[in-house]
Amino acid sequence: MAASDGETAQQQIDEIEALSSIYGEDWCVVDEDEKIYCIKINDCLDQPKWTLCLQVILPPGYPTAEPPIYQLKQNLGESILYLWVEKIREVLIEKAQSSDPEPHIKKTSEEVDEDDGDDFILDYQPIQEDPVKMLNYITSESQEVDEELPSIHHGNPITDRRSTFQAHLAPVVTPRQVKRVLEKLYENKKIASATHNIYAYRIYCEDKQTFLQDCEDDGETAAGGRLLHLMQILNVHNVLVVVSRWYGGILLGPDRFKHINNCARNVLVEYNYVHSVEESSKQAGKSKKIRKDNKKRLEH
Image (cartoon, rainbow, N blue to C red):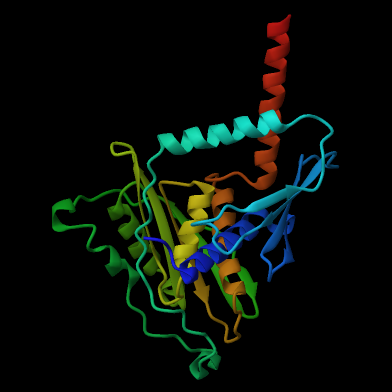
């Protein structure tokens, strides 16, 4: 069944927010109305020698029915079409060999705007349903095995207009570990008092070669799905990320989603679940140099 225009537009928004979080200052909005964006790519040296600008246009049907339109704004001065073709081939082979299922994301109603009258009360804390209960359907009585509580790490907080966001991370390989980590976090009064505790997790099941993954908004509509989408783009697995938000009484609008994603990505980079953009580029440069050196040795 084809996605509706509203679903397609939401998928675009989710991807744009995730890419903005990943690439930071290298991500540029050229024309928001026409969906034109630019990503600066350089060799990540202290004084970059080569910089490319990848400009992309997202048509109305992207990503379900239409491909993105792209243009490189700089030429490297050498033939690179073969490299492009082979890189695309690598991606297709990897895609064909994987069987990543669609995430099971709880459908939510249309997002309610935050600017209701009560949101202006600084000490307002809504009555919350404990997100830990959401995992009870996964961990049945037959699974009552006392598993070890994974180590829990806390990222650096981000504060904007009196709202504070902080990410928490734990390695997990079973849904019961996810539940135990959430229970442990909620023992902390500060975390338990947060306005929202948004979480997402991805667990790779080697026997079935599939992913077990889920997310929770905890009242911040669509935030859990966007967090899970970021984790999918970064291709992280066997990890749970929780982002706590303490509302400060001032509306942030879409910026709140940017802060949630940035908190999550920062803690994933800090604990080596994903490389920073700079490290990834340096590793790619090293790999290319090794391939060239090996080729030279073979020629001799």
